[in-house]
Image 1 (tube, rainbow, N blue to C red):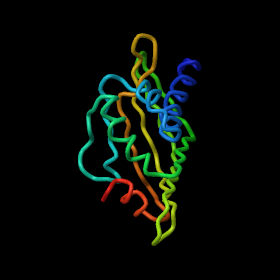
Image 2 (spheres, rainbow, N blue to C red):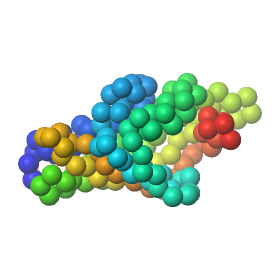
Image 3 (cartoon, helix red, strand yellow):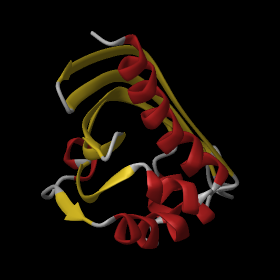
Image 4 (cartoon, rainbow, N blue to C red):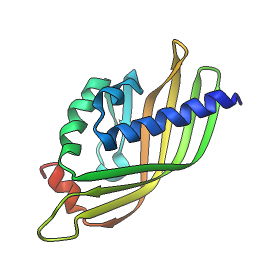
Length: 149
């Protein structure tokens, strides 16, 4: 495996998470291919969405604005490449903080992410994100309130 590709793919997926936590939506949109599949069905149910980068920002920016802070961490990176396609599988740990007068202000979730990436004009882009939640701790109402549920 090309070590530069490995480093670039890890950086790309980390940049996605960093951009969410810092609300840097301009950078956030640059990590994706023109169409991206988002699969968060392990937690939310439903079906995966196929959207454009501006669609993701339009949905996520107001949601994450509702939190006082978030921190999305990726680790234990496993990278595979085959030409201009690649996959990063990583463990994740995400904490969300939102004041709640009736409960704990924190909700933390963990599990695994699988990012499918594609090299477009020499630059790696994310074309699919699959989040598999395996555990959670804290107040899930923090997220429900942020979603307006």
